[in-house]
Length: 598
Image 1 (spheres, rainbow, N blue to C red):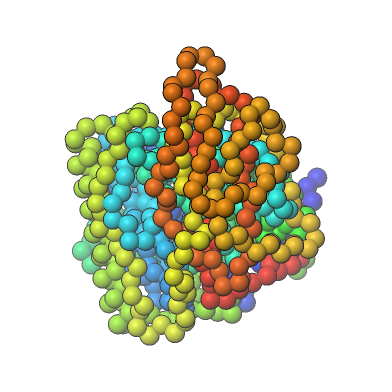
Image 2: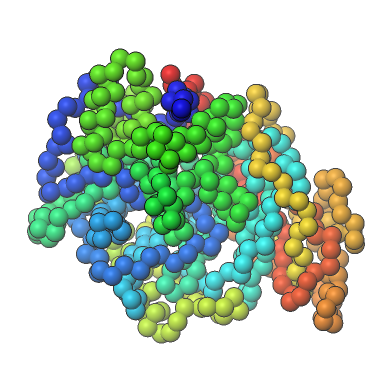
């Protein structure tokens, strides 16, 4: 028999950006919303709110039906106080079970520092329509590369032990430089309270892959207000005066117990438990892997965030198993079901508030607890500014669709790693100015510095052989008491040249002074005669990362040692590991995790 108390403790989390305001639950069925809107308690998570950072996401599903034109959508009259928050438009998503489109609502978002949103759109293909996803590009980026598909990943797991109990492993990734792909090995980064490291990833499009380098983002509760998807009736949204305003918020606490990934590189929330969904590619976020070794970036963060609570991960995993095999009731699939379940729990005096949170997928914006979320009213002048921002974002999405359609008409997308990429210019919406009347303080990163820049990627004539080291187990759960990380080093340079045929028995020695990087000539390959040794040529260094925080606490993890064995044939290219830059400063330190609910 399943111990239900374990699951209640597992999800009695203090992550929530909001909670339901105190008061009796509704006993009536879901209200009839204007415009014939059916609010959904499950569906896709807006990709600007979170994405799984897949190393090589698969193409999106081809749908047989043409998507409708984007609807007229306006923000609600309440917004978070943070002046960084912007409104990001919604978009149509395909629902396989309905065999029709649903609307993924727009939402309030605090953008990741030094990032700008590139909206996605639908593209016409031979067999139907495919979604070309959006992504967070570097700030002020105007030129975008559509790359050939990256080669198969080489990551074989960590080759050195974790430098500390709170370290997080980031899988290696291919990086395109000049005319070819170079391999960036996996590496360890230190856990930073209040900052989630989003690893480098690729976003598939019908005209090629777009590379998005790693960046720091906020925990889910600090990213904004995520609104629920809705099913809209054409007889309403096709009317000239139709305007949709999101009214139901997705509860952050609920996401931890019902969050899934799919091969198309998207998150889904709600009841996707069971074998029939597993066969369609739905994977719990706690089981998702990047390249087979790295954890889902959100799970990697929250695993360390709750590391001192040894029962957190165990209870969470038991919850997913219990819901999948039917020992625990799955979350409500409709708003009517949710209302009835909450009423039953409320009438049961032995049930706790945690049990209500576990089944509350969405809540009306009017019931958000103002003590948990600081909201302010959107004035008439602010609404006029927001309408302009919405139109600018919509125009940018239309421009991207036209550009990709033009590239499709010119020929097939790059298909081999050696194919030449396509470079285009896009007018991406810039970060809007502060809305007049906003009272909160803006979070302004300090000027960038080059002292924390990652080492440049090097070109080599011979690739590293597959790692022979035994893959290390997943990072251990934090012990009680998290030790403070050592102060950061001011210079990060590539590791020293390898010693031939000698496997490292200990962490590599301190790197040499950051002057001129000189690497030993590559070893000769065994099968065909090797090419003549070439000098190591450094590729252009990547853009400078975000600046270190005011009180530096960066953990500089030792780079993985170079492979000890000769390289196989055919030759490939290799790159030294990439170090995650320190996160930018925040206006206030993050809240400490609360005790589990009872």
